[in-house]
Image (cartoon, rainbow, N blue to C red; front, side):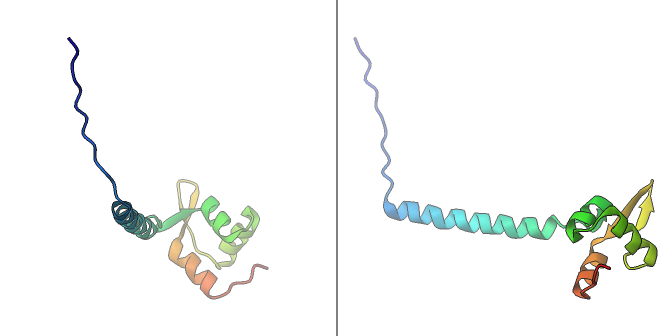
Length: 96
């Protein structure tokens, strides 16, 4: 005696796929907006600042010594405030 298997079949229409695509795009856009809002750190380490500005360690140290870019030193690590870096870039600071 053999057992009969009953299989359910769901049909997906072109309209179903289009609705899914639209919902997926909206979800991705929402995730991207949230990640941009929350991923920005208030304080950055020197290596992050050097990458952001495209400068060497010596140039960053010179900016710190001249007072161009303030830092806070905690446990031997310099931290830079993100808003200070933004202000520096908006002022059009030329690296000399």
